[in-house]
View (tube, rainbow, N blue to C red):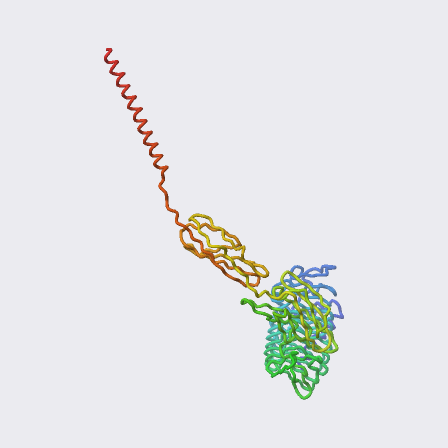
Length: 535
């Protein structure tokens, strides 16, 4: 109690300082080591960038006005924040935009209404009270898509904090608890992962909190602890290695058709609606009337069919429980059950690979045609529809199911060719019920060779008999093979008569030249003798 009083006095001083205008900056600067006016005010700016406009996030807060957005770029910011204006504070990347409290008290205090804190890692508050990642003393705030860890507590909603939303955060490895609510009403805690604490959520003297779609894992004492807290709605949560402690509290643990998933309890589901046939008693005042057989998730991935070592997946996105999913290849049909409360409208979107099942489509709910929205791209079709009542049987009937018929490969007739002659292979006689997408020809000519296309060519340089295998494959991997034999003949070398011809010409030329030279020489000698005789 003393610790609470100390914290409340500190916050009250901050509130009082806000009434005195300029005293706010000086008081918070003295108490938290902050300097709001390090840079001049930028008048009329709707979006403030950190560190572009202000080096620290708190300096940006100090120079903002109600309704502004502060965008914080990735980086580590060692500071504590006091948010006293209606601001949207957004981190660039929740994994890389870090606010580190350096183990000094609470990292972020929110005292104004309509504040959004989104996209941060918030860590290292003081481990002793009141070391909290985010403490809220106001209303209608949204804390979403943050990673909050290594604090005394993750998120705390203090007295009279109402209509706040805590959603899609990863809250883990805080010392005492992930989330605490004290005298706070009408708050929403949804789709968070809350793991590795002493307590996952602690709710004290609080009511009308909706706790939906969260996963509690490895919280050593309990996943949810309720003390003197009634009229809360807790369903669609997954309790994995996390129990519930309820003291002087009576709450609702299902929505009239679906409850929570309790890992480790024995369940039986004879009608395949995804709901246990037996309620789960938490204590004498609280029970889950409709425990979920499987973990709750709005998005489910179903392994619909395995063919040629490939798994074809169908996804369902629904606000109701999806169970008993099946795919019938012969019937070209997907079927499953959906279960939800009587007084609400359920919706479902089913995304189907076109190779598995293609339209035109017929969607039936309990045998009746349903109004369906259809969206498609090159690879998938998405079908959306709504429904009412508790458990419905959904059937989606397509027109063309996955092709399971292999092609027929035909490699053409055997061939006999001379070496060093180009061979054209012919796979054009191959056939498939849908169409062949790939032709592969393989053989060994000294080394392994691979050819593609329907009619490739190749020149064999080495004589011999070659067995060439054609593999014809369709779009889903069905295939067939066929072989063709290519006999490559050794062409014997012929005598090069042209060499003899050249030799004869060359020898004849030599003889002719010799004769001419001999004749000239003889005449020269004769002329010399005649001149000598005249003398």
